[in-house]
Length: 205
Figure 1 (cartoon, rainbow, N blue to C red):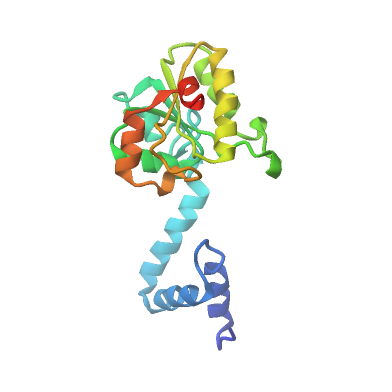
Figure 2 (spheres, helix red, strand yellow; figure 1 turned 135 degrees about the vertical axis):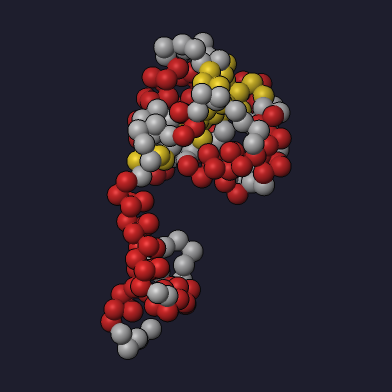
């Protein structure tokens, strides 16, 4: 795609680096921005810049946050003795949208994948163990995808958490095998949370 403006072409190139955005879509977005008022574009770009510069990870659960602790960890109405372990931030959003979970989260930042060279030490597993070691944790829910990597991660965490005497459960298998939580509909995901089973009982089936 050869454009008459090098600046427009640079903008299209950058927009096309976003996931799911091809060059045709990038072109439409760039032209839309070009037609907008300058203050709108400044507000748009400033929001992206501030997000990149100022969003951080919660020091407790590793969720994204504008402050040292995220809004969920700061909420006194959440059950801090109930921790839901998820792969990434998209899963937090998906579970929150069900309005079925009143505990707190822990974001691993991925799953164990030996093929990709990702082991337990590459994830936020140590932070999770530090949270449950002092006691006071009643239950840990392993809300991981039903993939081989998700099952491997669940097996590892269940073994480590069992050493701490913590009750470990997992989502009911209403989720499709190989599926991701972030793409599961809210009704199915909500029922899976409500109908969760003890981890050992679930994996023996």
